[in-house]
Image 1 (tube, helix red, strand yellow):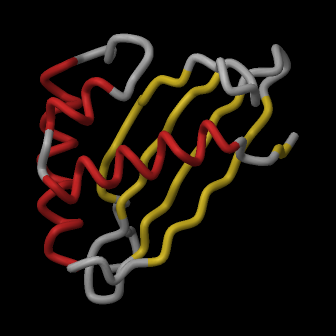
Image 2 (cartoon, rainbow, N blue to C red; image 1 turned 90 degrees about the horizontal axis):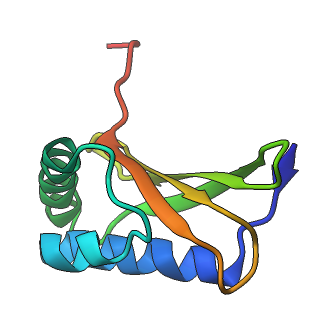
Length: 116
């Protein structure tokens, strides 16, 4: 089932991308409401995605999809597409579509292409 992204979720995504563009791991890490499942892995993903976003100089298109799980939680996938660059995917989990939702970051990686 598909849902709509809430204002709180959208704001959190925007802040995460701003943190990545500025290269601030500390700011990015503060934006998740639940601990990362693997800090070292998430930091590596952040550093790679941060560098790639900085290289695009803000020339990208962003889109998000929300999947609704049976328990009502949201799985959000945000894709950042830039010409001449590898797409970046940020995935999040949100407990609901309210402003007090618990939002946690799950992945922030480059989208692999099997077409090349």
